[in-house]
Length: 69
Image (cartoon, rainbow, N blue to C red; front, side, top):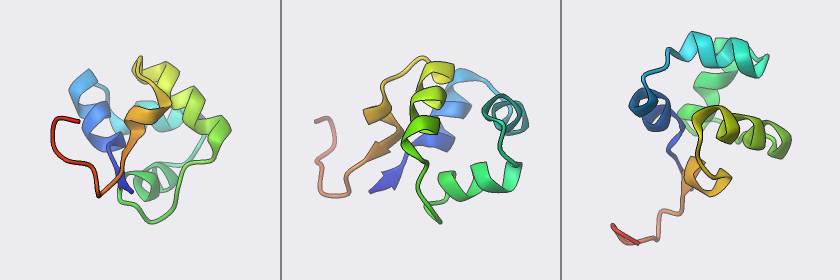
């Protein structure tokens, strides 16, 4: 799976530090989620999706998915 978290944060115009504060995680932890070093826990995924006004499914894309699907 590929993280779309960084792209979504940028598209919404938020600073990563702001999102980390709202998520109650360190900027390093957020960076780990963005860079696929580890996956976001499901409870945090729902909170992040709510903050970014998107679906939890939007946070990651499956590498096997074709563009536009």
